[in-house]
Length: 344
Image (cartoon, helix red, strand yellow):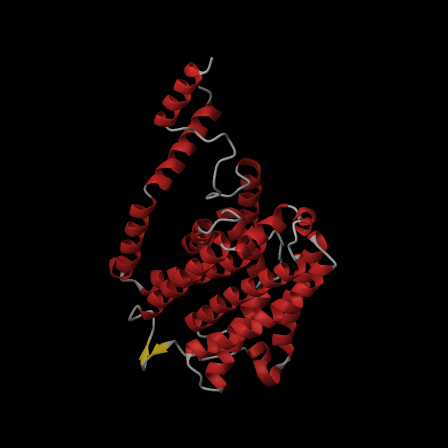
């Protein structure tokens, strides 16, 4: 067997193992996640993990738009900024609790998603990507120059931590970690429900062929706008969590680098998959934290990683399934051989 054949066989076997033992693996993962804060018992590592969770939310939001609908966005940091600024301002200036502030941020980001989704009636592809890039920069400029509201370049300080019934959720008491787990779990279940619904099938049909989707009676414009809205709301939720985690935001917190990083997470993990968003976030967020001496070159490394991925595994690390013909189990092989013998 050739080297390529061996690698393909190994990949197939791994995929089959994951598929067969999915429930047990999920139960084991849940136990690890619940016990993780007590195993590590380190505030720095917990902060990094919550940050990974926030970027997982960003990636899940962009994945709905790019992975399932096929619309590439280069300005999703704008939606993150809207959620972070709206929730922070509501908490600092209006005294609203975290969850009310987060909902306000999601609504504002959703409205922005409608406005940004309208150009999809006229442009697609590269032109749409440029429009989204401009959107991200516009949001950054508004945050920088609308000083009376956003405090300009000074940013928003002392953003309060989330609290439930007067109990403040922090890294020290591990509350914000479990809040992150809850938000990610709710988002994942929501994404699974969307993907398996008529809406999700419409998204995937648009990604595959817009002309064929139109001929099948799918209202492309409406579904594209809906995809933008869902994506924006999820990213705004993550932005609210991220702002509460770091306690301070300014316009440079949500620059183009953030949009690039979110897109890199989606591509590296596997566009059109949910599990890939976790893998991509862990690799791209944890890696700079454990290799600070390479911080100046991190985007060069991201570029190299993406080029290698597009060359050797364009569907991403967790892209399902491998591009080669899927290996049959021994039982199925026996049945196929039996059918071949019985055929005259």
